[in-house]
Amino acid sequence: MLKSREGQAIPKVTFPVRVNGEWQEVSSDALFKGKTVVLFALPGAFTPTCSSTHLPRYNELADVFKENGIDSVICLAVNDPFVMETWKQAQNAEKIYFLPDGNGEFSEGMGLLVDKAAIGLGKRSWRYSMLVKDGLIEKMFIEPEEPGDPFKVSDADTMLTYINPSANPPPRITLFSKPGCPHCARARKMLIDKDYRFEEIELGSHGISYSSLQAVTGRGTTPQVYIDGQHIGGADELTTWLEK
Image 1 (cartoon, rainbow, N blue to C red):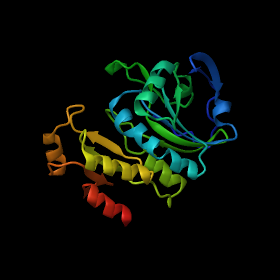
Image 2 (image 1 turned 135 degrees about the vertical axis):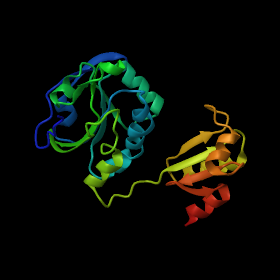
Image 3 (image 1 turned 180 degrees about the horizontal axis):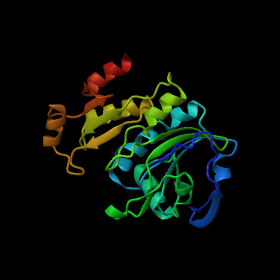
Image 4 (image 1 turned 90 degrees about the vertical axis):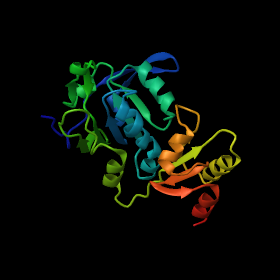
């Protein structure tokens, strides 16, 4: 049974980390004492849900968390420092602090170190998130004990809603584009000029083709823009949306 530790202090752990190519140590106190911190823990770097959903959304909302009084957003996994650093670079997640709990000591202290040997992963952290104020755990969202890899409550939006139900997160924007397309370049520039973060899916990369574009958007031209799941259209339609 995975139990919440709300109202309790975080485990006292010293983490071996790599900084500028050198080994250093960072303590729990250095990360949490006198600070308001959101920490989300996950089974492992480069694993499907962690890479496609859990980490990216926290990265998208990092600035919003800071606007709402959060000093740092920490991603913890039972991985070594080299893997965590490589994953950080691959995800372009410079606003997230990646904390390698390589020996699983913090996760064990939280009572959330689980055995995933059946799928070859060994000891890993259960998926959860928590709000920590000056070393004390105020709130935890622990995924239910279900088969597989449940991801229902530890997401960034749930945490943000707890911290501030009136917070206004930025829209989720997806831009379908193709190389050399001037209208795509115009749409991209408009979004950048407005300081909107967006996901760009480029035809010709990672197996994305015109068939993929047609299947998803029902259109055969680029760009195609989606905002919060709503199909906006091309560059002209994006201009109208931005003006509104």
